[in-house]
Image (cartoon, rainbow, N blue to C red):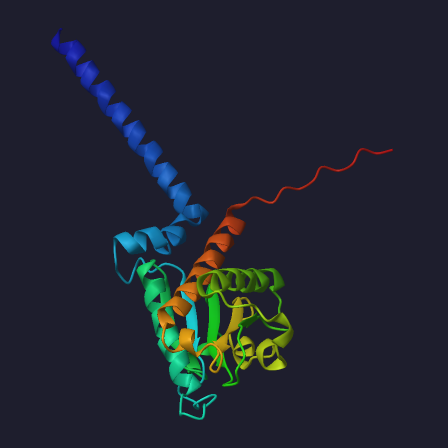
Length: 246
């Protein structure tokens, strides 16, 4: 092959490589323009593979009920609700972090609650010392994001029941739950819920002796919600065509 043809071939290869590079650059730029940078930064998969402060996954706020404020319910033998809540809440945060979720543990009246923007907020409590069994989950009575709040409640209800075997007691949900103070403190677009994990009386074997199982159910419920939330945002809205005129 002549020198002239070799030079033309080399020049053609260079232009081809440049075109491919420009095309890839354009695709990457378009991906980031469409929110890819934030999706990558909050990816749970990347956070698990590359532990760092940058790849932190979606933020979840967990309130350890009564912590930093009071003892909560106190049983006759001195068992305090606040300590039971903290044992479970701490485990929930650890489990979420292992799944690539940036989770923070908050006190009952933590100043960070004010205006907090998060993918999910959950307050963990236990019920009284009476000899009954079952758990409760509720969201805010008044909310601008009822669909998101209900998704969070539904996921927690399903996964916690599966993990613990406890019965969901919808009729026992109180105003103290639906009008929980933290719902009014966080940003209006932060989905929130409160869970009563069981009774310190009838469910003590679970709450005190097996907090890992309770925590696993809660963590699974939050992950379920995050997955459903992601699926919802990725699903395009289909607009029905206009009906033909009569």
